Image (cartoon, rainbow, N blue to C red; front, side, top):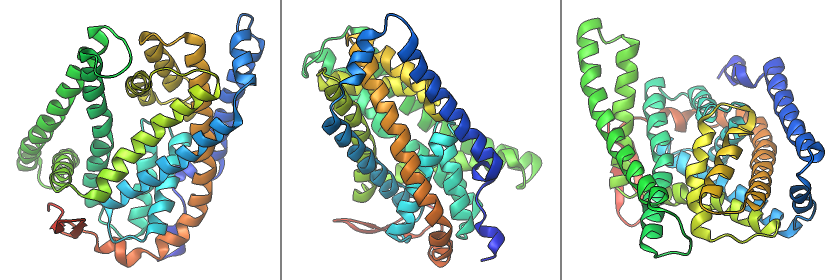
Length: 358
């Protein structure tokens, strides 16, 4: 591997990275100044000033566990031959990059794609598995909305909300799953038409093919019930939600767990807004969703701000360390990563060996 191949992606090098970090710092300082100086926020200031360090430390630990589960899921989807060290380095680097490059999670995936290209993986395979990974990491969120919305509507869990906030989100989530699967089938047909019209080198045809095969790969992995993948996906979401539960306790509140979960799942849609570090988009979405589910606005705001602080600091610190190690760990993985190709053997705990769809 040439030295040039170990240079970082342009977005995370030199002046661009410094500018992005300065923007994040500026936005964070603006939020702190707003809370400190604006009249009428004394109750919120009092809550934040008396936060319980033990609960906040628990939240930080939950963020580390969530990141580790993300790395497990990444390894299961992209290359089960990678060492755990390289998988953790890429996983935590991606989560750190999502803080600096907030594009609905695509910023981190772009860093992972860079690392895998440097390891020798075919770019078409990276594209299709990026689609699969993005789809798979969304599945627990969607299923959570369906299950919790239905359970709240039937009174099976603690918490109260109107049918519009229980059955409505559940139905919308179910429709999103169906539409995504149908989009994959449509993309396959559209790719064939585009290839016939413009030739196999068409970029549009390649993109449509990546969408189609990526969704197909995701469904194939789910059908084979890869235990590591399922644990990684579930843990990545569950530990992250429980950070919000911990920050509610840190600032003296205890809303029903089901309400925290569904408020989180719906409010996190604000993360699709590309603001630095997710500050603002996610926070407004989370607070707004929780208030709709009858959580007091002061308690929701304090808990969400605590959650956001942990979601920024922990990935940024661990992601920086992982990224500094990543160039070396990727260089050692070239043979394993280059060997990850369609049809590779994937070990399924309790079942045996299956193959990722070609």
